[in-house]
Length: 212
Image (cartoon, rainbow, N blue to C red; front, side):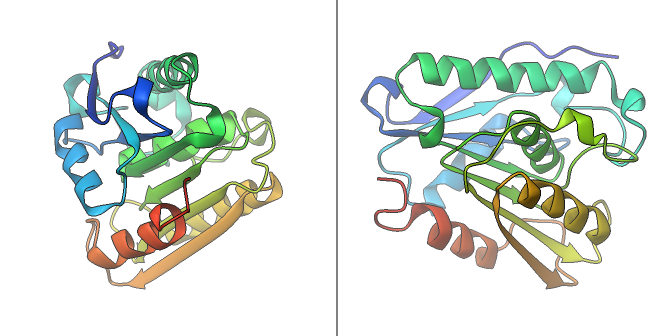
């Protein structure tokens, strides 16, 4: 099993000049470098961008709906890397309510797991095809109050990796924790990020004034 080392690709404007930050979390087999260009399709002009890189291009070894212990210690290590990154961004002067998260697939699962274990008012959360992690959801892990943070989960039905049932179950947990949920389901969507999903993310989070 593996630990992750802190390896962060940065883009956008320097954090000391930024009003807000975007944390982009890549999927299995991908890279931080492959996530960053997505920001070009979003209105992120005044944002500092941070993309952590998983060791071996994977945040945890097996499916996110396997028992959690099958994905340890890699999962805890991954959550720790995200937590350190968030603390660094806050130290640099960007408050949590101006930090946005975006993940795809395995990265979307990690994104949702991190923010739900550390619920507070964030800028926004975007999970392109993901859900909370575990064979069964350990509700005692999920603490805090999202303070009406807007949270988007988009997915296909069916999706080869992410069951719609888990997407809905995850959204219900987050809604109870005062998240403002948007769940968008596309019939027979491929396991990729589509233009439609980018458009919805822009409308919800990055349109004029959405993150000013």
